[in-house]
Length: 191
Image (tube, rainbow, N blue to C red):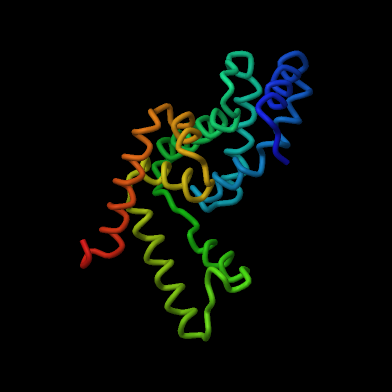
């Protein structure tokens, strides 16, 4: 379900007037925030917990949210990232990303994006994805965050800038640098 900025503003105003109305915002943004957290930690239970924490914090702090015409989703991504980073700082765990999902999802296409002709092709593709996953895991947390927002969540540069509280031009610079570093990690002989 998508809403216009004006419709979202009305949903926010309704939630401010009556916290029970927050459920409409929750329903609108839950899938995107949950999917993002699953892609960032590859532990569905942890993702559910962090998603729950994200929406609880959003509900508690909604009165401090200032409508600027930008999607509420950007603010929710910022909260989710803060919760994820707080969790990893507290638990000192390495981050993982479930890139294998790309492989599984790609096989469900009509063959336009990925067509595996036989078992050897499938093994090669899986090995490549696993190598990419390992390389992605070696990126700095901020690099993983920005690439996840851009390529897993398909956010615009403006939405990423709002989520990370940086300028739009800085988004482009950071994405470019992160992609180059990922390429060097994944294909060191080509660097």
